[in-house]
Length: 139
Image (cartoon, rainbow, N blue to C red):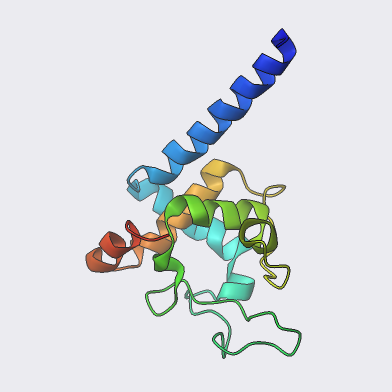
Protein backbone atom coordinates (compact mmCIF):
# COMPACT_ATOMS: atom_id res chain seq x y z
CA UNK A 1 0.00 0.00 0.00
CA UNK A 2 1.19 3.47 -0.64
CA UNK A 3 1.54 6.06 2.09
CA UNK A 4 -1.51 8.05 0.97
CA UNK A 5 -3.84 5.03 1.32
CA UNK A 6 -2.39 4.22 4.75
CA UNK A 7 -2.85 7.82 5.87
CA UNK A 8 -6.49 7.87 4.74
CA UNK A 9 -7.17 4.52 6.45
CA UNK A 10 -5.56 5.79 9.67
CA UNK A 11 -7.65 8.98 9.61
CA UNK A 12 -10.85 6.99 9.12
CA UNK A 13 -9.99 4.69 12.04
CA UNK A 14 -9.12 7.64 14.29
CA UNK A 15 -12.41 9.32 13.35
CA UNK A 16 -14.46 6.22 14.11
CA UNK A 17 -12.70 5.70 17.43
CA UNK A 18 -13.20 9.35 18.32
CA UNK A 19 -16.95 9.15 17.67
CA UNK A 20 -17.24 5.90 19.63
CA UNK A 21 -15.29 7.27 22.58
CA UNK A 22 -17.25 10.53 22.61
CA UNK A 23 -20.56 8.70 22.38
CA UNK A 24 -19.81 6.29 25.23
CA UNK A 25 -18.49 8.74 27.82
CA UNK A 26 -20.60 9.82 30.80
CA UNK A 27 -22.58 13.03 30.38
CA UNK A 28 -21.00 16.16 31.84
CA UNK A 29 -23.46 18.66 33.36
CA UNK A 30 -22.17 21.46 31.13
CA UNK A 31 -22.80 19.33 28.04
CA UNK A 32 -26.44 18.95 29.04
CA UNK A 33 -26.77 22.73 29.50
CA UNK A 34 -25.30 23.55 26.09
CA UNK A 35 -27.20 20.60 24.62
CA UNK A 36 -30.52 22.08 25.76
CA UNK A 37 -29.89 25.25 23.75
CA UNK A 38 -28.72 23.25 20.72
CA UNK A 39 -31.79 21.01 21.01
CA UNK A 40 -34.10 24.06 21.10
CA UNK A 41 -32.49 25.46 17.91
CA UNK A 42 -32.18 22.25 15.92
CA UNK A 43 -34.57 19.59 17.20
CA UNK A 44 -37.56 21.12 18.98
CA UNK A 45 -39.41 22.12 15.81
CA UNK A 46 -40.06 18.43 15.11
CA UNK A 47 -39.48 16.64 18.42
CA UNK A 48 -41.11 19.28 20.64
CA UNK A 49 -39.68 21.87 23.00
CA UNK A 50 -40.48 19.53 25.91
CA UNK A 51 -39.19 16.43 24.04
CA UNK A 52 -42.82 15.33 23.54
CA UNK A 53 -42.59 14.48 19.84
CA UNK A 54 -45.30 14.98 17.25
CA UNK A 55 -48.91 14.01 17.82
CA UNK A 56 -49.77 10.41 16.93
CA UNK A 57 -46.08 9.55 16.60
CA UNK A 58 -46.90 5.83 16.70
CA UNK A 59 -49.22 6.07 13.68
CA UNK A 60 -47.70 5.90 10.20
CA UNK A 61 -48.22 8.84 7.87
CA UNK A 62 -50.03 8.20 4.55
CA UNK A 63 -46.66 8.13 2.73
CA UNK A 64 -45.35 5.38 5.03
CA UNK A 65 -43.07 7.63 7.09
CA UNK A 66 -43.56 8.21 10.80
CA UNK A 67 -44.06 11.44 12.80
CA UNK A 68 -41.10 12.56 14.92
CA UNK A 69 -41.04 10.51 18.14
CA UNK A 70 -40.68 11.95 21.62
CA UNK A 71 -37.28 11.95 23.29
CA UNK A 72 -38.67 11.81 26.81
CA UNK A 73 -39.05 8.46 28.56
CA UNK A 74 -42.40 7.84 26.81
CA UNK A 75 -40.66 7.42 23.46
CA UNK A 76 -38.13 4.92 22.20
CA UNK A 77 -34.98 7.06 22.08
CA UNK A 78 -33.74 5.37 25.25
CA UNK A 79 -33.88 2.00 23.45
CA UNK A 80 -30.83 3.05 21.41
CA UNK A 81 -27.18 3.44 22.44
CA UNK A 82 -25.45 6.80 22.13
CA UNK A 83 -23.43 5.78 19.06
CA UNK A 84 -26.62 4.90 17.17
CA UNK A 85 -28.28 8.19 18.17
CA UNK A 86 -25.18 10.10 17.12
CA UNK A 87 -25.30 8.46 13.68
CA UNK A 88 -29.01 9.16 13.18
CA UNK A 89 -28.59 12.82 14.10
CA UNK A 90 -25.45 13.43 12.07
CA UNK A 91 -26.17 11.29 9.00
CA UNK A 92 -29.97 11.08 8.97
CA UNK A 93 -32.46 8.34 9.56
CA UNK A 94 -32.50 6.87 6.06
CA UNK A 95 -28.70 6.60 5.86
CA UNK A 96 -28.40 5.11 9.33
CA UNK A 97 -31.31 2.68 9.24
CA UNK A 98 -31.37 1.87 5.52
CA UNK A 99 -35.06 2.79 5.46
CA UNK A 100 -35.80 5.50 2.87
CA UNK A 101 -39.06 6.27 4.69
CA UNK A 102 -37.16 7.43 7.75
CA UNK A 103 -37.50 11.21 7.35
CA UNK A 104 -35.03 12.24 10.05
CA UNK A 105 -32.73 14.72 8.25
CA UNK A 106 -28.94 14.71 8.55
CA UNK A 107 -27.42 17.48 10.66
CA UNK A 108 -23.71 16.89 9.95
CA UNK A 109 -23.52 20.13 7.98
CA UNK A 110 -24.96 22.06 10.93
CA UNK A 111 -23.81 20.25 14.08
CA UNK A 112 -20.40 18.95 15.12
CA UNK A 113 -19.93 15.62 16.86
CA UNK A 114 -19.45 17.56 20.11
CA UNK A 115 -22.69 19.52 19.58
CA UNK A 116 -24.57 16.33 18.82
CA UNK A 117 -23.16 14.62 21.90
CA UNK A 118 -24.27 17.61 23.99
CA UNK A 119 -27.81 17.26 22.59
CA UNK A 120 -27.83 13.56 23.47
CA UNK A 121 -26.52 14.42 26.96
CA UNK A 122 -29.35 16.93 27.38
CA UNK A 123 -31.99 14.42 26.31
CA UNK A 124 -30.56 11.79 28.67
CA UNK A 125 -30.46 14.31 31.53
CA UNK A 126 -34.27 14.37 31.48
CA UNK A 127 -34.57 10.61 32.01
CA UNK A 128 -34.63 8.78 35.32
CA UNK A 129 -31.54 6.87 36.48
CA UNK A 130 -33.39 3.63 35.69
CA UNK A 131 -34.09 4.67 32.09
CA UNK A 132 -30.47 5.79 31.62
CA UNK A 133 -29.26 2.39 32.84
CA UNK A 134 -31.62 0.62 30.43
CA UNK A 135 -30.41 2.85 27.58
CA UNK A 136 -26.83 1.69 28.09
CA UNK A 137 -28.01 -1.81 27.10
CA UNK A 138 -29.86 -0.58 23.98
CA UNK A 139 -29.16 -1.39 20.36
